[in-house]
Image 1 (cartoon, helix red, strand yellow):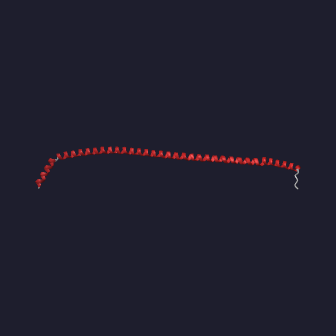
Image 2 (cartoon, one colour; image 1 turned 60 degrees about the vertical axis):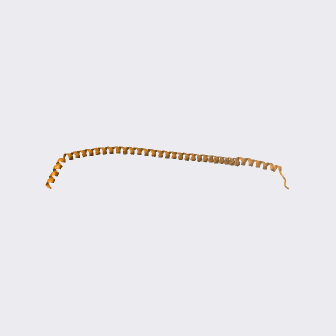
Image 3 (cartoon, helix red, strand yellow; image 1 turned 60 degrees about the horizontal axis):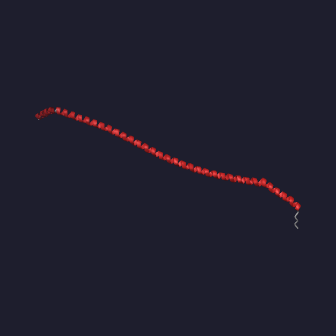
Length: 140
């Protein structure tokens, strides 16, 4: 039936083992090395993506912090400028009020002097008015 030929089995075993060694050296090791390199590259890319994602979130947080600080500073500057403008306006109003009060007091003093002069003038002319009235009565 089936006979095993030892002389034929030895070359087949040698060819089989040499083929396994050849395939291992030329096909399997480079293929496994390529797959390991690819896995390492994927792992590095994932780590880099995670670090970039972390960096992006850190940068976003930093930008948000800077924006909030800028808003606070802008509000403070606006408040300070408003207060300075109010103070300046108030001082101008006060100086204008003082100027107007001085002008008013001067006007009142001049008005009083004019009143006194008019009164004196009228008092000095009373005798003339009396005589003019007498002359009018006598004509009537």
